[in-house]
Each structure stands twice: as C-alpha cells, then as structure tokens.
Length: 394
Image (tube, rainbow, N blue to C red; front, side):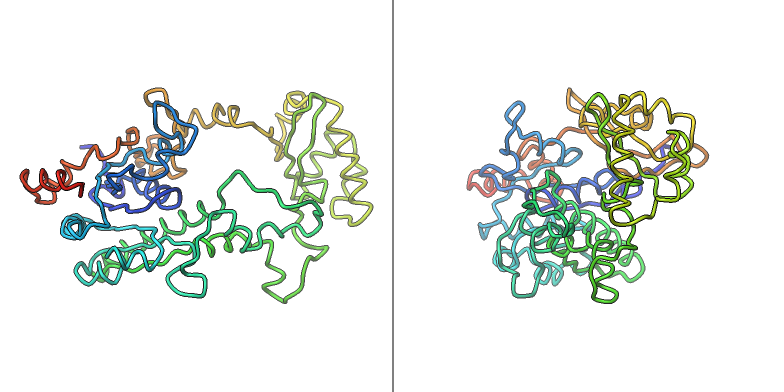
C-alpha cells in the first residue's frame, strides 16, 4: 500500500482571489489536501485574466492553482447560501480573503460559518485584519510593504525606493496562513473544536523586519556599526561583478570562510580587516570588487570549487530553473509543457530521503470544471444542480 500524504483526506474550501490565498492553498494541496476553489461564474478569479496569458489563461493562475478543483458559485445570490453550507459541511478548512464587511454581507465570515460548523478551521486573509482603523481600506502588496517600513530598511540609500518584483507581503501572508491552518487542524485533533484565524497581510510584511528592526525593538535606537554584516556594506557579504559582466555572491560571514577567500586570492592582508568600519571597510570592498573583476564568473567558481566557502553564481531565472541540484531533487517539474516549482517541503519515506511523498502535478482547472461532481458529492441531486445552473448560481 502506498504511504499516505500528510494531508490526505483533508478538504479545503478556497474562497480567495489573487495571490495570498492561492499560494497558501497550493501548499496545502502539495501536502495532499483536496482543495476546492470556489469562483464566481462570471469570469472566476480575476487572476485568470492577468497578462501574460498562454492558451487564454494567465501564466500566474496556472502556476498558483495546480492540483486544485474549480467550482463556480455566485456568493452574492441568496440562493448560494444553502449550496455553500453543503460544501462547508464536508470541509475541514475554509479560507477567504474578503474585506470584513464584505465577508459578513456574503455570510462567509468565521462567526457565521462556525456557528453552524464549530469544527471548521476558518482562515481570513485580509489586508489589515478583522479589527483596527485600517480594516476596510483597499491596498496591494506595494502598499503593505510601504506601510511596514520595508522600503526604509536601508537608510543609507538616498535613491527613491524601488518596487520589488517579488510580492513580499502576499507571500509572507500565505506562509503565515498555511502555518496557522495546520495548527488549527492539530488543535482540532486535541480539542474537537475548529479555529478562527485572522491573517493580516500588512502584519505579514511587518514580520520581515525581524532582523532590520532588531535594534529599534530592543532598545529604541537605530543602526549600530556592530550589526550583522548583511546589508551589502561589508566586503565579506556582497555581490560582485566579474570580468564577463556577470555576478557572483560572496557570503563569507564567518571568519573561517573569509580567511579561505582571502588566502585563495592571495590577499591574506585583508583577513584582519573583515570587521573594519568606515573608510577602511569601503576600501576593502573596493579591493575585493577589483579582484573579482579580473576573471570570469565561471573561472571564479572553478577556482573555489574544491574549498569550503559560500560563493555562488547570481543566476537569472532560466539558470535558476535549470540548476542541476534542483533537477536532482525534482524541485522543478514539467506537465503538458508547463514547468512548476514545487513547494519546498519534502516528506520522505523512512530510510530513503530521496523518495518524497509528493502530489503528482495536475494542471490548473478550467473555470467550473468540477462544479457538477463536487455538488453531487455534497448531496445536491441532478435536478437541483440543473436549476442552479439555469439560474446562474453556479
């Protein structure tokens, strides 16, 4: 008998739109949960239409919603309440991302749902949480990152803040939500009661400040010359251009790594200057930059291949996806011409860490592709399903 995946038998009802909820439920799906994505019949999740599109569907939707089923349901219609209730009755987790007033109006808020289904783990992923002055404000990732102070982390950078291509707040919220939902399931096993989970995206962005804000948090002061050298100001922890206009990343935080680097490049005089400050550190950084500029990226990687040091290429996206280590681990897989990045979670079988209990990749579902099957499983007979479809409810 094949071993069970960790969340096999767990059913998740996903009412979210766009990124945070979809990423969170993708992780649950990767762990073996059955994820039912509930979408509006009139177009579905707006993420389906985000450019660029391949074969009419957004590339973003395709990579975020694999291994899920799609059910259409018009939550604005009063007729949807009974259908939703039937779905919730057969679910372990419900996750939604409406602003609190909207969730209450639609009847998908935790108080309403858990009054009828007390074992339900109900997770709300919202911009600013279920209470507080900003609760009903609209915002997107750039707003949460701005409010949380992430653009102000480097006070020495006089340039205007740049919008990152990574959606830091959204991904942070997804990770927090996933952890909380798993904790909710664990608590239910012990108590028999579900959970009401409040995940604010704004506070998820704030959580990235753990290291940059440590000094402010502990004693209220700002930057310290003795802070960890992870800001790009120090020579030992930086990115350098090579002779072929490519880049390498040097992470020689520990003295042993810095010593290996300096000795291998013939500059033992730089070893005692690792922690130097001010103008001396700037000079060391410039000298290391000049050293790296004398050979190509591959030449540097070859030169350090046989020693224990934190030196890596700075890969572009295509190179990262083709990384031989990731290929060996099956971290990037292909299905019907589309590649997918698996979640970085591996449950291995005893005695064989390479044999992972991973969910086979299934492509993102067409809008409403599973409506009939899921509603039938929820106890709605064929005549009722036909009426709901004729009325535009599903």
